[in-house]
Length: 78
Image (cartoon, rainbow, N blue to C red; front, side, top):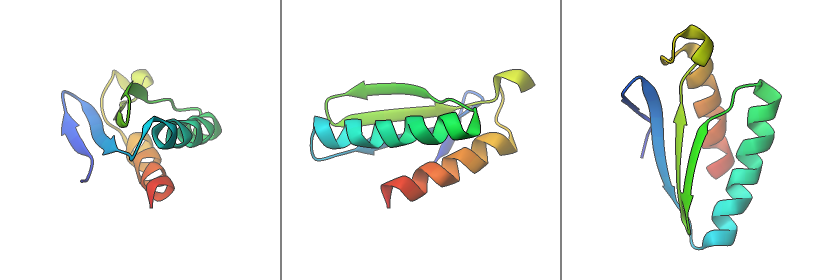
């Protein structure tokens, strides 16, 4: 599944085998977000993770900064 633009955010849903795999992924996302100084909204329930990206400094809209981070997050999952 690719990222979808919803309500001025890039959104993607992920499903993992279990909670531990989901949390390992979230830790990797956290490291990447810190590197970019651009932090997603994160929603996690057991093995499901939803990430949302928007650029607050630009008025909470999707910018190239969001697209770049989304592309790098996708590389974590592959």
